[in-house]
Picture 1 (tube, helix red, strand yellow):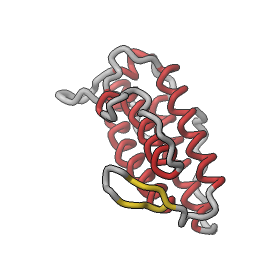
Picture 2 (cartoon, helix red, strand yellow):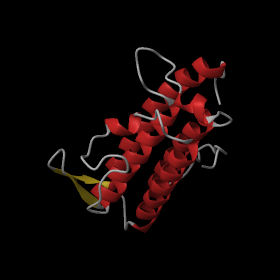
Picture 3 (spheres, helix red, strand yellow):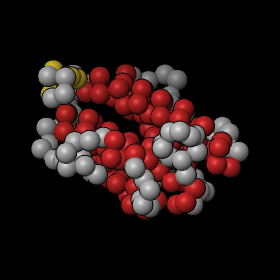
Picture 4 (spheres, one colour):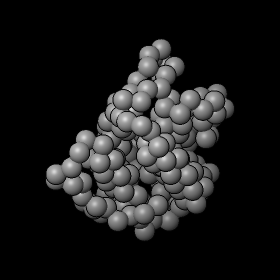
Length: 168
C-alpha cells in the first residue's frame, strides 16, 4: 500500500475533494503500519481490547468491499474473511500476516477506486441491505472517510503502544 500521503486540494470540486480525503485517510492507516513486523502488527496493545493494527487493516478491507462492491456495485460476494457476514472475524489477526492483510486491503481499495471513477456521478445509488435503504455514492464516500478517521484514531494509540511513535 502506498504510504505517501498527499494533502487534499484546497480548491477543487466535490468529487475530487471527497476522493482526495478518502485517499488521505487510506494513506494514514498505511503509514501507521509502516516499518512494523507481522508480530508487532498483530500485537493487541490496549488491553482488554483485542484490536490490533493488522486487525484494522483486515477490517478496512472488509468495509471497502462491503460498501463499494456489495452496496454500490451490487456484487453478490461474501466478505473476505467471513462467509457469514461477520465483520468481527476480520479483527482476529492472531494468525494473519502483513502480506495477506495488505494484499486484500490493496485489492479492495483498487476495486473501490475503479467503482468510484466509473460511476456517472456521486448521485449513483446502491442498496444497503442492512439498512433496507438505497444510499448514494456520496454517502458511501463520506461514510468511508468517517470509518477511516475513527479507526486511524485507534491506530494512533496502537502504534504508540508498540514503539512510542506518534504522528505521521
